[in-house]
Length: 238
Image 1 (cartoon, rainbow, N blue to C red):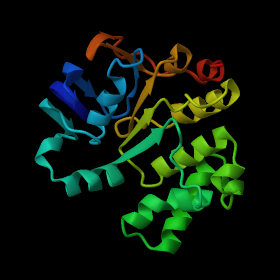
Image 2: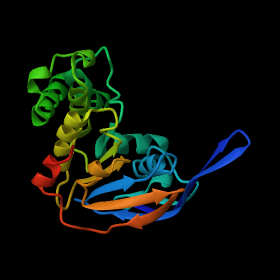
Image 3: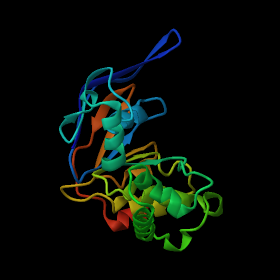
């Protein structure tokens, strides 16, 4: 489903050249829960952005469901991100003047879905993450864990084929982190939806089916496939 072929990403920072990703080849199949780990500056977020069509490689190819992302126009990549990929970020990225249901409905509205239908789907997504009773709350009326669950509902409202999470528990306390991880663990669908999560937290990484370690822009280790984490293991995450 998600594939990188000999991908490198180079940024220019003034006179300095930064090799964020170096000759990485990676394949993520439908239904997998893959965790990408690495220290700060290792290139893990850049890798996620390349997988999610938020960025394009300097060299090599990035593919989504067999389509080369660089062969798409900016508009095609934008539509792909809106319809096929859900994103969850560390700092939630909720609009402060919109209610929970309005934040969740926003991607549908931007895609041309009518307001009534968009809000009905947003309400269903909020119910799915346990926040049906918070639909009319503004972000500053919610806890950190609730804001992240709203962000997850927004990622899911379009029924995406992939959900990409960048440090989704990095701004949460241990109790809310465990709550969010239990929810994320339920998102993969065998043969269909893949989940990729970037984290530096080994306890959070334990919920994945496969763990990829990245260092200095290269894959340092790939644990390979294993049985999905059990509900017991997820509930034990601090």
